[in-house]
Length: 257
Figure (spheres, rainbow, N blue to C red):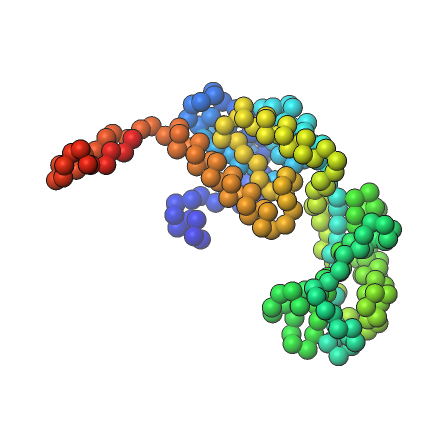
């Protein structure tokens, strides 16, 4: 609503098919083609999609850039949310949760107590937990039914926290190819991506595939991309005529160009 009130057109449910490059250095230097057959011209484009999706969108613009984006591997995961009565949990639940290292060879990545991390996630007499399942190279279990994943999550908290009560609530959310992996060579890939983007002013990438997977990292990436787009669009804008305030000394008047 805030954006629309400022004249921004927001389109939802309109898949983008590809991004094309028009004449270099001209206004509206990119053309966006949608699955509906519609096409619009743009001075700047920010792709906040996963790296493998961005690769498909810009494949006709820069083959090297697209190939490098495809090299960033992704892992799938699932989150099992479980709620319990507070009186059923004897564990003190200090901190906000724990991580499980790969050396443990377990399907669980982590467990967090959401109602301790964030306010109003559960009633005062209940505790809400999240168990994260699946890691890169060990994702076959995510294809199982929800009941199987819930059972794995309950077995985890029974083992680690001694919670054997029946949950008040259980939910499963799956995130296929949702987590980029910063494997060996990631910095080299970032350098190649940056070099390729220098040839395409106004085309910027944002999201969790590059320099951080957390929300603060994604926000920072989005802000940097927005600033970069603003600079490009401003540079392409035609200069405005100089103006002089005749009510003051002309030598001190602001001139906008």
